[in-house]
Image 1 (tube, rainbow, N blue to C red):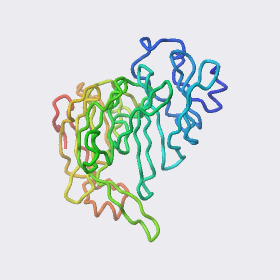
Image 2 (cartoon, one colour):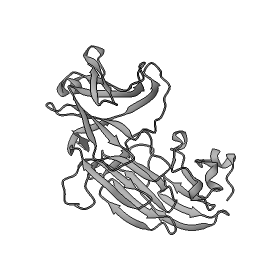
Image 3 (tube, rainbow, N blue to C red):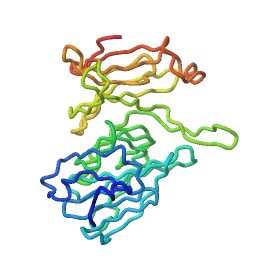
Image 4 (cartoon, helix red, strand yellow):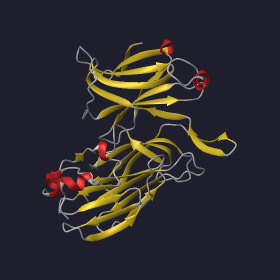
Length: 318
């Protein structure tokens, strides 16, 4: 099969033209995903030896084709939908395995999130584990990577599926095909009636998206290859507070809690201060959970920005 600009327009996401000509040893170990094309009906991942892995995400089909477009293997995966349900594939950096992450619809009773690993040759499932609803710790999920740090809701450790599910930091080594670490962070999923006929799940903790810019007075989005990255959590109960954790996305070290926030974090920014200090700025809502539920919109009069020195690991401005 020949990949062209025309095929990209028809819905194939072109991840990197280098992959179709280079061997695994020549390929970068982490390849970003094209966020603009992630909703395309068919996503195509070119393989180093030729051919591609094709994911028809809304039909729930994955197939591996050779350089002539001939189907070599196929598998079924949970189908994604425009809203509420998603299925994402991440390839190992040696192109021998495929991680499948499925986020189910949390408004449905018994929402079943799935995490599975498939081997590339025949697309057979190597393992499926109750790791929960998983998202990347920083930014979007990459298309290709050797190791992946995930924040997983309603998660259980691979070695103890009887343990009560909780929010966890999970590191998966795709090149070795194993879960390298599982660290609980606390937080549960609860069933809730939203109306006489409408039932769904809510979580008593959520992560706050962390934006990155080069300088604190700039609006240009950027990325960082720093090993440690801040994770900002919002605890929704009346007595709980927000938290800032430092997560090492390149090793399997336990996350390190940097600070407890005296309020509910609403947004966060990583940037470099004018003095060259890497900082985290967290916008904090000082209202109680009950007050926020009564009026969910942001109210500037009740907001405060807390700034942390990430190098020193301490609060510098409140």
